[in-house]
Length: 259
Image (cartoon, rainbow, N blue to C red; front, side):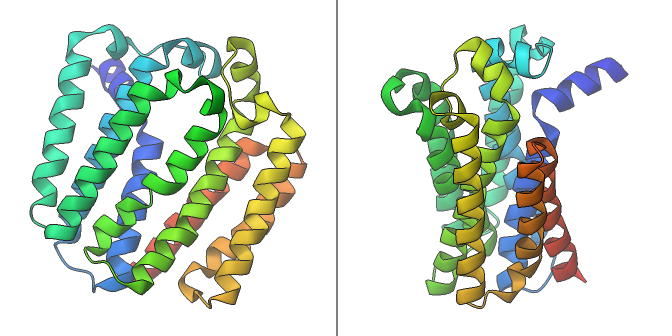
């Protein structure tokens, strides 16, 4: 029983699902007082990411066998596809309680997530950049879903957080560099070099800091503090820890807004 639960949590990539939940919660808390409605935000964001990550696991069996040292058993079971479909439906149902903008954002982020998983392998000539730009453009829609509205301030957060998620995706390429190199998977780091991938990540971190300070986005101050730690970790060749540090900045910001 415990092994099945462990496999399920691994199948939906619990860590990344939590990140998506925190991002959606951030959007809600930036523009609304804490209320029970945040429960539907949590469910929608969790279900979207869990379903999309699970679907991605089915498509990335070869890479996961090397990068993650195992293939999740749900990948080869019929139940895996039922889990994915059920999660997408549950996420959409929860978004219905959040208003028109949230529903539209959920539909957009879901369509983009499925489309990326289906077609990214065919985009050979620019596949090494597609994942990074997809992450930076699509995942911040969860913040918009949480906010449940669209205005100038929401759009500023969307673009700034999009940059942070973009650079986080580049850092994950550095983290998975060895496995991607062995399987021939195209990423920014494998197509160019590890050093150039790190340079893009560091430059993006500095650009993010410049935007946050220049636009006086005080709610993202912890992200700026974390960015300097992340830069130091990247130069110490510890991209995995740098990636985790970015997630901790998001978690800490959400906790502060809740308090």
